[in-house]
Structures are given as structure tokens and as C-alpha cells.
Length: 478
Image (cartoon, rainbow, N blue to C red; front, side, top):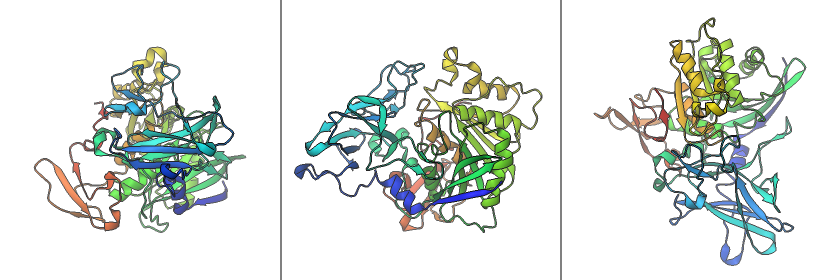
């Protein structure tokens, strides 16, 4: 196995790529028509979310331009078949972003909204949106089959593989009027120094070249005495190694959790799982490559592996075949619940987390319309019948990028958790353990006081309910 190329995507460049939508160079000046293309995100007291996003696009030959996005539809949690979508203009607390599945749901999977034509070929639209990440593109002159990226907010490009990420992306901040269950501040790019970097790399498995993206945490130390833990992530059918680092917001989630002192720094690898990648290839080629080139632990307990959709099925089979090579498996939106476990050994070595969106077709609720062996409930039940104890999370979302960043966030909190009864190095403890089980810490370093509410100077952690303070919309299934 030979290292062929290393493409360094330095943190400062990464910031330009992911932050351009949040802080454009010049905001729209409607009064004198000084229009700047891109997206301007502004506080807005009249918005139901406390913020608006204004999109400006220039195309002087188009006769019609539509803004399009998979996550601009919103649903109530008890709308089981997603029959009643709400638009961004109708948003209120209790409505959650999701993309319906064409196989099961009658509602359209993509929200289209015609933009307003202005002078000199400019087009604009303003949406109120709650906290989170929103992929988007433009449809021109009624052609909804051709996705046109925002040239002022381009997609990520991997020059090694020649692949682009799927969409342009914006990140919306959180306001208290949204309600705590809508706080997705953990996907926001940071605007301080506490940002990691992403390397584009390629390696060989025999005659086949594989592409990976490797996230390194802020202040990564190749000579650190204690090697880092590693998380490996795989996409689903039709995806690529770009997915988790763009749509999945893995770098931002890691940056924010590390800066808060909630998890230990770790390396994250997003892999290319196309063209016949085998489970043995992961164990015998990819893992050794990472361990040869980065300061990461060679112990199985210090590795995690997770995947979504068909990548979730891949992960479940990796768990069955190589149960001691990883200490944590995240099986999301697909899992092999039909496997005969009677002859398998060491399945109790690793922690297992099953997960899906509340409207995901891979849930048991939809099993009569899908392959029952692939749904998450059956996978989890199969393990529990053998006396194992997998975790099982259902979060607001469908088979989409509303769901999967939430599941990664939960997994990172769990696999990389630190002892929250002991203040991290960059914290000072304010008071002792309270009667209600809470521990309070404040930041020492003033430069950690960044604008979005996730990084408030004081936060609380309840020892008996790990996730209760941030995501009260999550359902933990015992």
C-alpha cells in the first residue's frame, strides 16, 4: 500500500469555504440596489425563527429562477406519513426540517420557491429558517433536473478525485424563540482559531485507488504521547467521500464539541465506499494506512465506524465480521436485521448505536412497505434478543441530511466523551455538584466567547441525563 498524494486543505481555506454563506462581504443594500450575490443571514425580530436568509443570484439570461432545497420543508412530529408540509414562511416551534421519501410519501422531497426578478439580471428571495444546515441550489427556466450551484457560495471540490459536494450550503444560527429542541448550533462553522483542518488523500488497494478525507482537530500533534482516537464514516448509495465533510457537517460538529470541552480531540476519516470496497479492505488496508500516516491509536477500542443508509448496512455487516476491530459502531438508516447471530462471537466487545429519522423509511413503522430485515428496529431487536445492549435513537428527520448530523453528534458525544465532573483544561469550575445533579463550568479563555449560543459562557450538564439539556426532541428508546 503506497501513499500517492496528500492534498492539504488548510483550516483558513476551509473557513472561507464553509463560512462564506454566514458572513458575506457586503450585505444587500435594497435602498440603492447595491446587490451582492450570495447569502446574507440577518437577525430579524419579525422572523418566526429570529433570523432570515436572503439569497441573491445573478443570471441575466434566465426568465425564471427557483431556489430549491431538500430541507426547506417542515413537518410536525406526529404527521407520520408527512402529508402536511409547511413552508419556511409558516414555520413555528414544533416543526422540523425533513425531506420526504418518494417511495413512501406523497409530499414533494424538494421545496421550490420562485425568486423575485430585479433589475440587471439579479434574482432574490428571503426565507426565515431555524437553526441548522441547509443545502440548496437553483433551478433555471423550469429545468428542475439540472442543479445549478450558487457561484458566490460554490460547492466543495476534491481535486484528487475530481468530485464536487452535492450542494451549496448555508448554516443558520439559533435564537431562543425557536425553542431548545431546534438548537442545531453544533453544525455552525466556528469563527475563531479553534478549527480543525481537512486533508484530501488517496491510497491504493491493489490496483484500485481510493479517496478519503481526513479531519484533524485543532492543534493536532503528530508527536503527542497519547495517540488520538479515530472515527471512520461511510456514505450511502450514490454518495462519496465528500458527503460527511460537507452535508454531514462532521468538521463543524467536532470543532464545536472539542472547543466546548465536551469531547476529546479525535481524527475523523470519511471514506469512498463505491466500486466494490470490501469490509476486509477497510480493516486490512484503510485502517493500517491511517495508522501509518497519523498519530492515532492502533487499539480496536479506540476506533469507531459509522454509516448511513446502505452504509449503515455495510457497518452492521462490518460489526458482525470484525467485531473487535472497532470499539463503537453507528448503524444508521439501514441495518442487517436478518443475520443469524448464533455462531458469531465477540459481539459484546463494542458499543452499538442504531439510529434513524422519525420519518425514515428504514424504521419498523414502514416495514410493510420496505425490506423488514433492513430496518433499524429489527436490527436493534435482533441484538437485544442475544442479550446485547445497543443504544437506539430516533431524531427529527427522514432519510436525509437533517437526520444524520444529529446522529453523528450523539455518537461523538458518546464515543469521545470526557468526565464532565472534572473541568477540562480550558475551563474553571464555578461551583460543586449541585443538589439537582448539575455541574457548572465557565470558560477561562475570553476568545472562546463566540457569537452563537452554543458557546455561552456558562452551561450545565446533568450527570444522569447525558443529552437532556440540548435536544429535548430526541427520543431515546430503552
